[in-house]
Amino acid sequence: MSAQIITARDLSDERKLTVSFRLLLGLYSIIPLCLALQNVRWLVLARILRENLLPTRPTHFLLFQILFGTPHILASSNFVAKQH
Image (cartoon, rainbow, N blue to C red):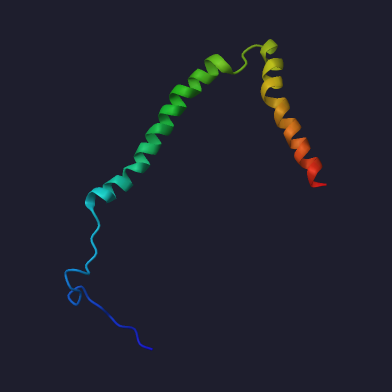
């Protein structure tokens, strides 16, 4: 077997592949867009969570533990129990 070498001159105009410049710019714009959204989320939502939702006093830790910690512990122990 031998490999054939095809140059751009050998291809007819119908077989040449082109990529849209707008498509490339659209694909490359996803990365800065995702970074910008991540920064907005970090700046805005982290502040909202810290100021409003996360416990700030020891009396809030019990409620926080019941709402978020206990279901996680129960689900993890149930998962471990099913594996054995």
